Image (cartoon, rainbow, N blue to C red; front, side, top):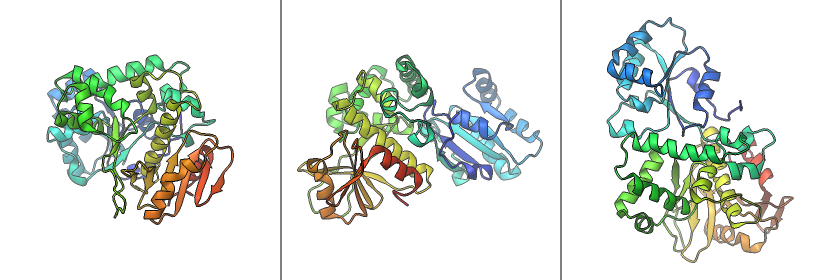
Amino acid sequence: MYKRELNFAPAKKESCFLWGPRQTGKSTLLKSLFPRAPYYDLLLTSEFERLNREPDLFREECLALRPSGGPVIIDEVQRLPSLLNEVQWLMVNHGTRFILSGSSARKLKRSGGNLLGGRALRFELFPLVSHEIPNFNLLRALNHGLLPRHYLSPDPGPLVQAYVGNYLKEEVYAEALVRNMPAFHRFLEAAAFSNGELVNFNNIAMDCGVSGPAAKDYFGILEDTLIGKFIYSYRRRPKRRVIQAPKFYFFDVGVVNHLLRRGEIRPKSEAFGKAFEHFIYQELTAHSHYSGLGYAVTTWRTASQLEVDFVLGEADIAIEVKGTDMAGGRHAKGLKAFSEEYKTKRRILVSLDPRPRKMGGVEVLPWKDFLVQLWSGNLIR
């Protein structure tokens, strides 16, 4: 059991959705927080088929519950969109409170499913973050990924392989989100090669043998099923010519390792640098949500290839990530160029350096120091 950073306290008073990829720990979290709550698991074939045949049973069972003030939990709610009409009726007419957990809202949206018209709060659970793990091990995180079972496993390879195969089969194929699964599998590999890079939709479409619009739709599937996210270009009044293409990151570094067949990631290798940047991205996106600050995470690159990996908020903080133990001036060129265009509160170079130091106006922060500042609330407020 890990103590998760997600502030789920509002769920004790309001109905809510809890979204997150499979095996991030949604069910474990809900069962630990609400051990006595009525629990409907739609992954169970018997439960799914029973309520699919007669959705009225759900309403009748909820009406028979003794008033307790606690929630009714529905896990994998996207599998049965029609149940949400019953949920809304119970919320409006009887004040019943629900926690609706799932790994994808795409099926609900595409089927015209009821998303409760703003009556439910929205939360998202991510893979583990460093602050949740006692004696956190960076190399283990980069090699195993941060899904709880994978991080803890002495041999995560078979688990990740099964996860990628089964997850895609269940989430993509079983829900008929794509018709051409071989092309989608080729697309996944092409998207993995672009992980953390600016996305060229036409090149990826050619690599996997589909049209440009189909490639964009495939990326949309990855976003809607929470398998990955775009981060967009910082666009505020650029003086230099800025590349507008977005970057794309998968939700977990371990999944990318598997898709790219990276093998063991070792310090000072190219794979280490890419995985290290991906890990920092995961920490930032989780913190933005868990902290309640909701700050934007964007990127910045000029036509002359000057780059800042991550820009937080309205240029409040510019961050470059380098897997080196001796950061130098060449590593900070993008940060310096960005500061010439925009007023920033802090410019940070996250590295493997042993101690913090100042390099002109750039702060060189060892990754541990950076994460302490992030999760203690001293980085961005």
